[in-house]
Amino acid sequence: MKDNTTSLDHIVLWVRDPIAAAGFYEDTVGLEPVRLAEFTAGEAPFPSVRVNDEAIVDLMPLTMAERMKMLPGAADSSGHPVNHVCLALPQDAFDALRARLEERAVPVSDVSHGSFGARGKATRSFYFRDPDGNVFEARHYG
Image (cartoon, rainbow, N blue to C red; front, side):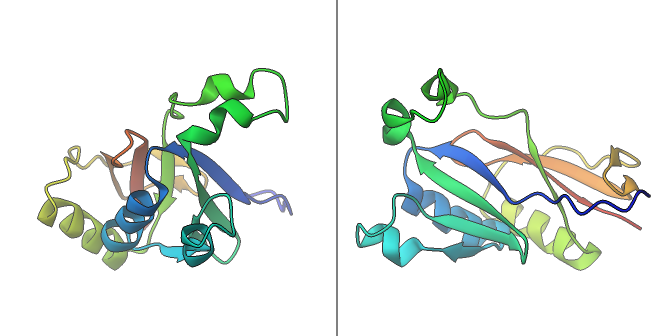
């Protein structure tokens, strides 16, 4: 694999209720909330959840869409989730995530084998949606 210093910093998802979304990602997916107390206190524009030491998922309130001015047409992306976001997990965390999703009656896809990703072919993977309709893939490698 090529040595590359570029890394994924964050992904921004449009959500209807950032507090509920943070709860889903913490309780069901197992990701740690970031700036949730600050958001709740009105001191931060949105909360996030931590994927790892280098990457977070921002939970952007859909109500902020009309104020998006960083580039022409930015607000048009609101309500249009990305195709999917993939989380690579160790095998035990993969199994625990699937179990938590099933316990909470979150629909999950069948498990597939050998799908290609950043580290080659995954041993197993499956898909699920968050409460706002964003699609996630969970996978683990050998």
